[in-house]
Image 1 (spheres, rainbow, N blue to C red):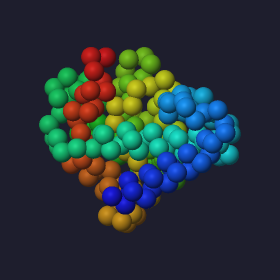
Image 2 (image 1 turned 45 degrees about the vertical axis):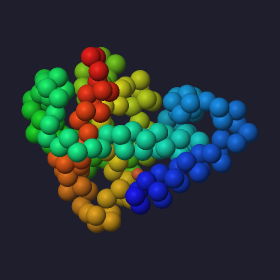
Image 3 (image 1 turned 120 degrees about the vertical axis):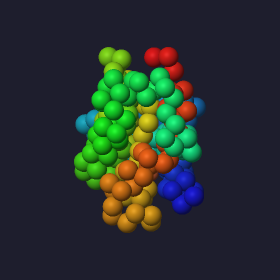
Length: 177
Ligand code: FE2
C-alpha cells in the first residue's frame, strides 16, 4: 500500500503536472515514453522519468500474484531453453537486480530477436525503450524493499521471484510469441 499509494502516486501526480501544456496530455503512456526517451538527456527529462516509472509500476502490480511456483508449462519451457533451469533464471535475475547500481529495475524481456533475456536498467528506463516486450519486472528502487527488508536487496529479490510472481500474467505477456 505504501509503495502504491505514496510512491506510485507521486509519479502520477508529477507526470500530470509536467504534461500540462506540452501536447503530450492526450497521448498514451507508451507513446509518451517512446516519444520522450533520449538516453543522453535522461537526468533532465522529468516527463520521461515520471511517465516511465508510472508505466513500470502499472506493470509491476499486474506482475504480482499468488501463483507462486506454478509456472505455465510453455513459459517454463521457454525459461529452461534460455537459462537452463528455473533456478538458474532466478539466480541470474537476482544478480541483475542486485547488480543494478542505484535505482532501477531488472526485467525478463522478450527481445527483438525472439529470445528471452534478463536485463537491468537505470531509474525508469524500461523494455519499451528497446522495442522489447516486458514479461516480468522487479523494482529495485530502495523504496520498494526498505521497510520489509531494510538494505537487503538480494533477499527482497529472491522473495519476489519465489513467492510474488503472477506467472499467469507473464504467460499472457508472452502469448504465443
Ligand atoms: Fe517503486
